[in-house]
Image (cartoon, rainbow, N blue to C red):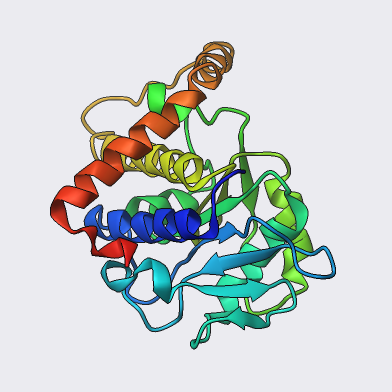
Length: 246
């Protein structure tokens, strides 16, 4: 990662604002984080996360706080949500490539998280996640730091995670990657929710695993396009309200 702290702050703040526009927020809850470009004096990563008490559409780059893996606020005049720290620190501890972590409680995401079958291969969008999506068993509100090891094991080397009876999580090498992954994971859940509502009228057709494997491999070849989409998202946000950069 070659972005400066300011660029990371502005990208993460943009992700919060866009998430609000898309209806992903859950009042003060759920969190996005991004790893700082340098480690602390002990060689441990630190990460930017939202201060507890802010709605997503309020967050500016300067509002974000820096937290270390021990739960210390290194920079900033606010606290964080303990459950958010457990989840995000777990990923940043284990996945050096997971620079950005996005966690949501959307209606569609929570609906699929409540299904034993998980995400089905119903469409081209969901096929991108075939064999690239982990599942984590529900253990209650994530206040227990011991759960971090189990979250890490559940995520493995996948690009996303469904937290059962809870919500969705995506990881990426940048905010651009993690945001785009979450956008399409949530979209796949929305499609599944809509298809389920029509199941009484017509049987639901799934994509065979062999074809889903092929489609997933096709998506891997165009992952570089996520950064083009991210630039377009930020242009849209700049036209509406560029105050996220402050």
